[in-house]
Amino acid sequence: MTIRALGDLVVYLGAVAAALAAIGVVVRWAVVRPLKKWVAEQVGMVRESTAAVQETADKVHAEVSPNHGQSLKDTVNRTESKIDMLTQRFDDHLRNHPGG
Image (cartoon, rainbow, N blue to C red; front, side, top):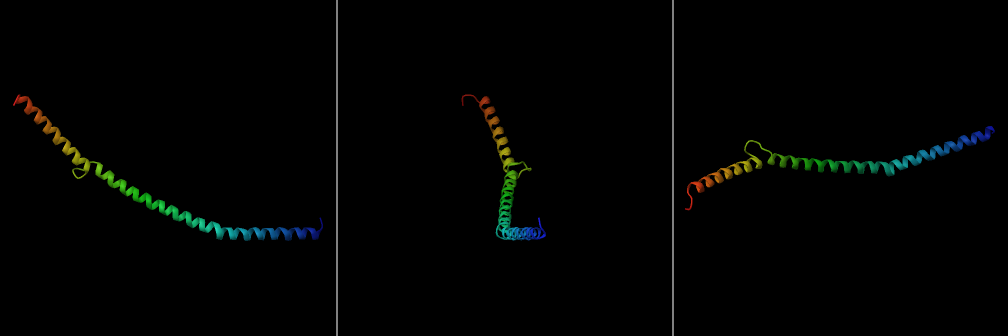
């Protein structure tokens, strides 16, 4: 290999490297940046949706968990205990007053 051929090889390799660098820049500006922006938007939307679902789940959990009188669960428990007490009183009444 001569010095001239070696010089030509270096020039060609430089040209290929420059072309690859230019292609990389174009790909980055035309593909990677918009794709990165789109992915960030999608992640943001998922986070917002997840936060909304979590907030709703927390509200439902608060309603169905006992909290000393204010939740739906406490109301159901009070109603159930009153019905049990009234059922017991009615059964006692029927036993003590047979036949009407």
